[in-house]
Length: 321
Image (cartoon, rainbow, N blue to C red; front, side, top):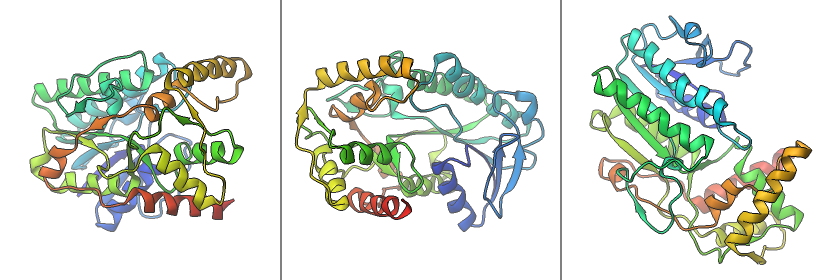
């Protein structure tokens, strides 16, 4: 299969590319005009998803699009997010249609649900905008793609993963390690809410599964590991692996959210990333129930145990220092 990928140079994209190449698929990776890469056996095309004219002709003879590129991370502005996540997705889908490609796999996020705690969330749960540039524009992107589906142009599958971790991650685990090392790490609330994480290798395996199985066309899938520990257990695991004291101080959710807001205000003037964000507090401070029954019923189950996955990541992180 000849697969066109956006977002191939990120830590998630690289893992997916390696998986697809191991399975002897041909991968055509869209990179920005000056973007570096270390792919020895991948066809590189240059363009920018926010500049539709730069995409023309880059998908020739491809069978499938895996659309991973997007704006994510702290400090995003709504305008920038719309340009990349909404308009960029439209541009990629339009070029796919122009190139005669029907199969389209899109990376969305559980952020589209609006971070609703203590409720069982299936793929039919209402999409809710909460003023978050990332989550709100991921909703927009899904609406854009559904328009192409309604017009009969795309065979679409959408995946909505939780937080993705693994080798190459420069956001999630490094931030936790930094906080634990500083001695300032706090357990938000009781810490007995489960961790919503999925290992990057499971995500790559999931993409491979979707490409193989025609019954996944037209479906949306939540993607996470159902057998994850609590946040308190996760912090203990990381601290123990590093030989550091286990965090045992707690901070109420409401206070943590307030403190994070103050840190973000300070960050605006200092131009330094805050140690804690309101987004992070929402993610780790409440219990969410993202159900993955549909994915498992269709034949895919994540296999990486989170405890073992985190241990490996911590060891690799320490070895690289």
